[in-house]
Image: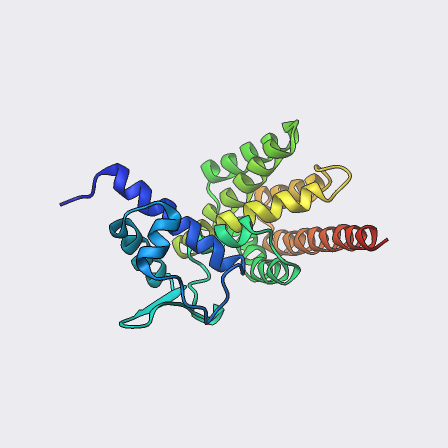
Length: 241
């Protein structure tokens, strides 16, 4: 029997609250969560909703429950790092430099190869989707519009590979990439600064030039990382001044 929507949304809220506390570091690995009745009372939810939330967090590798001990927070190495919720919580707690660097490394492995594959295999319809996303980036008037269109562009490139495994992986890290694109654009004096790179990737895919597409995508990723690091360095100097 399915749970009522209200109950499902309630345990989802509880899961989000506890998950965010763990991922943000407010609750450290090795710590034992408060007793069930205490935790339920502090979150103002039923013990049933709390138990459902804890089951999901356990499945994500964030906690483990032991009889007589309670729910203990696990070390990061046990977390399902590619879980959409875990990624969203990491992004919501403001990504650290280390997390951004790891995300960049992941992009360097996936996206240049995807751009090359798209240049080899794209269909006319897939090319049209990439062009549509590029035009949306060009027309963007706000940072939010730009970030949405930027994500749409990279999504369209991944779909043009014809590789459903790549497409699935992108859907998993989409939340984190969206945050990265926003941070990168926000750190620049002009949030459209990377538009020429996107245009070159588009042209390489249109002309079916895999190596050009690969190298341009790699350069785009490196440039955005450099820009972000430069901006954060300035912010740290300003804060310590």
